[in-house]
Length: 501
Ligand code: GAP
Image 1 (cartoon, protein in one colour):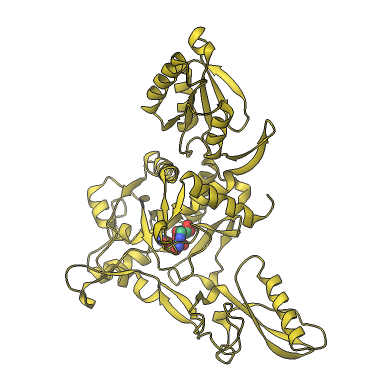
Image 2 (cartoon, protein in one colour; image 1 turned 135 degrees about the horizontal axis):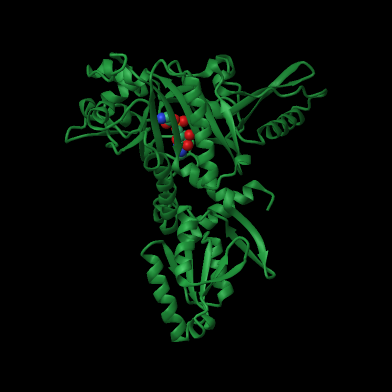
């Protein structure tokens, strides 16, 4: 299955068919930009969040957790700059009523033998250059122009000159004249708090979990046992009214973030701390089954950094639809704490005992979307191969994140001794792990059903188990190897596979 579009289609189908991800409000035809996680999806998602929390909070001494409210005092967003600056450039097609992000709509003048004969436009994707060239050739043919087509230099619509707006065709209709100039569109979802529905009651669904951390800085410092440098971690929902949600759960309007604000002294070398975090995050991705070969770094060019940022590096992942941001690691200086100190009038600083000095700490922020990690894991794990002459779909998910850690099967369902023993083992394992019990259909088919949802081990109770007390067979989803072990050994084996040695 070489075609990346086919791979995405197959993954989306599998997600729906086996209960990982459903379109939100499916019975009402779906709701663009929203998704529901089904019985298997919620397990995978929870396992990702749990692994992150274990590794970054429980297994470290310098990071504590937080779970702030989703709706903050609205002044939070004024102080953070979101009310004024959390915008995307929006362009409307007046004819089709379609809306695009101006920085994802690309255009170029079509020039033949030194003359501009019109414009083409395409939406950003891996193949947009080829699509634009096809459109340019079509235009040249239509206008019966002779001569060589000059190379197309695609630019995004935010770079169009005002006089070009009316000349660039809408990607929806192919005709010029209907695209508006770009305008800023604030991506925060608004709501009202309380009975009044006026400006005084306006509040926002958080577009990131980070600000909840900054506004709780003093509470954590006053109540915890933290010592600089230290981090505050938070996992939770974030909401963005994305103009163009796309690529399944990659860019949606409601998603989850796992963020850390890691506070350091202003005198500390931020570049070193930033690099340490980048490397730490790469190592974590690898540890949960995202191969290093599919990850790359994109340091933001200095001239494109937000005014408060000293440096931002995105960790990119090779999705089937292109190399895209998985995580951002930003060095935000003291911008956020300074802003909230000034606007709230509450000092958000740190007293350094040794130096007897107060200062506002600086911060390194690793921020990653749970849904993007979910998709990166699925696209890495998804394979189609052949077993015993039969095609199979297999999710090679590591045991730590797999929805079910093992499935327990009696070899035959009409042999009470096998069923009894299998049920007993299932109940024993279920106390520790999420495991599945299946007695229906032939054993090959039962394995196949589990392979498709990423269950790493199939445990079969056969006649040797009950008649000779010879243990059970444990089949490995990836190597297909089967080994016999006692039921006690199975418990220890699974514990090692899921939780590490
Ligand atoms: N506090 C910093 C912050 O929110 P961001 O780059 O806007 O930075 C961080 O978002 C991460 O959140 C991204 O790297 C991505 O993994 C995830 N994310 C952002 N927008 C998303 C969306 N619309 N859908 C899914 N995940 C998203």
